[in-house]
Length: 450
Ligand code: UD1
Ligand code: MG
Image (cartoon, rainbow, N blue to C red; front, side, top):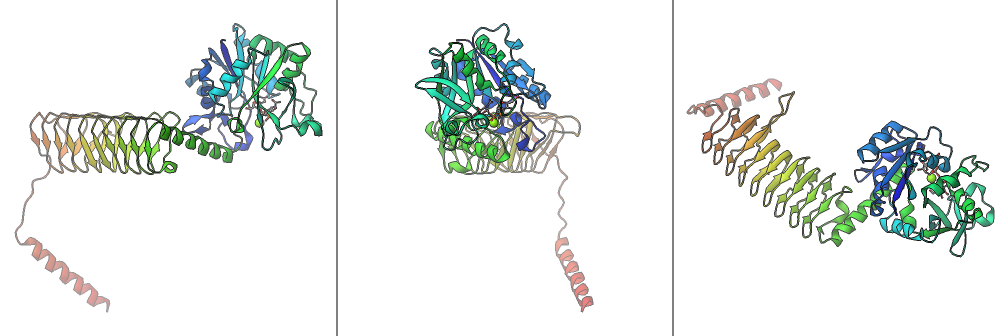
């Protein structure tokens, strides 16, 4: 069945106490909106309409970056039913199911949505419900056997209805044309004075259409309303990612100290030591070792490579097989070829390092002239002496060397030794004289103080 997502994201989210619209807040580096959309990936939706309201331009920009083409505006927030109706024009040419999701509810699982889609074979309208530990102010599902008769909002419910613990998650699916027709009949004569989306259930039943429900675990329906809930959701997500990594054969020495982005990919038999942070877009191949206190984002680490401890890999770091990146080394937008070593206190940015080359402690690619960035190209089997400054644009040929402490400003030909430092002079006996003089000055000063 072709599916169109309608994602409600017009609410203000005032309890976040933020300038940012709620759905742009992030879990594991990815917006709540992207999480909500991602939960429906398994249904391979053909269309996605995001209903924006508060800070609509920011929401639109994020939606467009996620590949959503239809972002519609709900100028006034008159209720969830009114919000869904705003998607009608965008879906005028669409034949298939509409699936309504909330932009602030990131944990609905693909399995649950598949179950919902399956139940659509038996019912015109299907709602996702859950058994709540504390039903609080959720809408209640009023059922008769396997049919759903209506949904009553907490504010409008009688004490008997409030005693029901089967609650409305807000997720609903129906043929899109049917859904919009039902919504036309929804009125706002209720306690909140809003157009309630859940009212379509009772209207469907009145019209002789069947409504049904499926359920999921309450944890999936967790909505984010406050920073505290966002922090809790981040914790839940991290626990899920850790469990998934362990399940996939990754060794985590101290799982609770490792933090993932939503798209982190780690191959089997990779080992991740304590206190490692993965930002977005990281792939780690099988058998790589990421040592303690390393921070990685936008990079790729190949098999057999050892990173850290205390390493920082930034976007565009391409680490080939058997490379060593050691402590206090930062790599950005640079390709480090097989077997190369950058072991201590170095910065390698906008560069390529060839096969088996060794960069000594304190090597710096001086890539920025204050206005523009420039590249450093280092060949194969090169030895860069400790504390070499490579002032880009510059290249070092195959099997070349640089002397420690050099400032390299012009290209070094293959097999050459480049020495770019002041010549050393030894003044015999001068140190001894200097020491005596300094000791005498110090003695005189402390005598003066007495
Ligand atoms: C809604 C349901 C309730 C359900 C609960 C689950 C209704 C009337 N009630 O209540 O049955 O148990 O969710 O969390 O639907 N939104 C808009 N435009 C609007 C109003 C809301 O885009 O005009 C968006 C909000 O940004 C939010 C979502 O819709 O993402 C739900 O709105 P909210 O006000 O939180 O509904 P609840 O009162 O919690
Ligand atoms: Mg709510």
